[in-house]
Amino acid sequence: AAEYPSEQTIHGLFEAQTKQTPEQPALFFEGEQLTYRELNERANRLARTLRSQGVTKDRLVGLMTERSVDMIVGIFGILKAGGAYVPIDPTYPEERIRYMLDDSGAKLLLTQNHLVDKVAFDGSVLVLNGAQGVYHEDGSNLEPLSGPNDLAYVIYTSGTTGQPKGVMLEHRGLCNLKTYFDQTLKIRTSDHTLLFASYSFDAACWEIFQALFCGATLYVPTTETILNYERFEQYMANHRITVAALPPTYAVYLEPERMPYLRVLFTAGSASSTELVYKWKDQVAYYNGYGPTENSVATSVWPVSEDERAGQLISIGRPIPNHRVYMVDVHGHLAPVGVAGELCVSGPGLARGYLDRPELTAEKFVANPFAVGEAGYERMYRTGDLARWMPDGNIEYLGRIDH
Image (tube, rainbow, N blue to C red; front, side, top):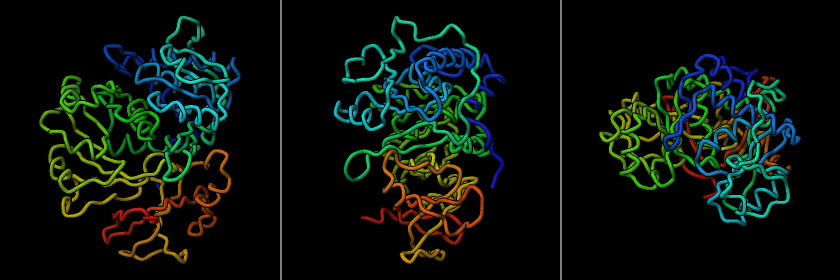
């Protein structure tokens, strides 16, 4: 257990940081830079327009932009209006984009002028970089409509079978991570952090809010930079990036000495390897993380660089503050140390469920029999992952149950 800003919202934490460091650079993309004050004001102006369009709490708003300043402004504008954003990667096939818009029931889509014709949409479209005035003249903070238990975003996970499903996440899950960013990763105003993931993945939430909850500067490289390892290493050096979260399958191709300013490397999204651990553990503070989208990005973290045995085994670490992890056997009992079971999670990061999928929600989000009467832990999520406790309290991930 740990104290966290449980009464706050994502945009509320950003506004509090803006008050502390208004002139600190918040966002950098391709030569364009916004301070905390500028980003906050632009998002406020957008939020007022969105409210006039009927956006209120728990209302889903589609957001389809390329990696840009518009993307971050759009996210905060929707949150400040009280709504929840549905990120849609414009590189997705048209059929998938249409499915996400239809399934989410979004009546409003924020996009960029060159993407307007990407997909036929029945609702209203607002162009973030167009000539028409989507930005209200009043840039002051708005009276909040949403609270910690209201929806912040809906992310569509591909799912191994059938159509993608929308996972509904509330504000408190990301607010809980602020403690981790502050106390463990020690994110400060001097940090230059990176947005690597596509914002249609929840890893991007970790990257964006890690920076903007803590006064750091968020750097957004282009897709072209990310797709070229050498250009990416050059970008990391040129912009003095100090904190990055990368998939292990990408990090394995990079050379630590070409990124001399990096102090924290976080890997997640797939299994790390002993090769990767040996390559990075002495160069940076290396953390290996695990977490399904259904539990607000991160469930457990392994500080690789602090573990004497790093390289002999790969772990997904221990639960982060306020998260509980249970290994449950086929009879629904807790599995002993060393015995494999289904990894189940509980805590403030848990999703509300799957959008308009009550049967699937009931199957995966179940009553938590191990924390009866404990506020905040009434439900647990069955991940479908197989894992076991190791004697030192770390978790070893063993794969998917259905494999």
